[in-house]
Image (cartoon, rainbow, N blue to C red; front, side, top):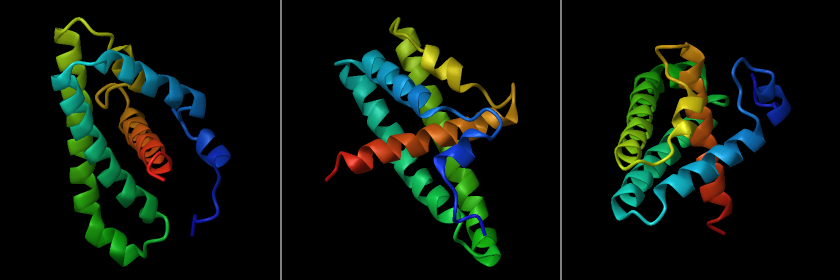
Length: 135
């Protein structure tokens, strides 16, 4: 069923991000956002979408095939929205002269479909950080 998995299992996947890479990318994003209120707003929108997407993705492994079928369109739509939010933030920061190397490191779906998964992986990391800091 896939419920008995570890981070080590994930790390063997094609184009998987290491935990250290996710931490570094997150810090690079925060540094780029800085104290810019517009960038902070875009980042908060990204986080909101990431948390929603991560919730769906986290439940995926325990869903029945029927439930997955019912949820698939919504999951894909939320993933598409997530990618848009990453791109919006990166474009804004780039226009302001900020470092967006983190966005390039995550990759673009048109270059490799696994980059879509990497963006989803990063959303899950952001949700993890949000969750553990909300205690």
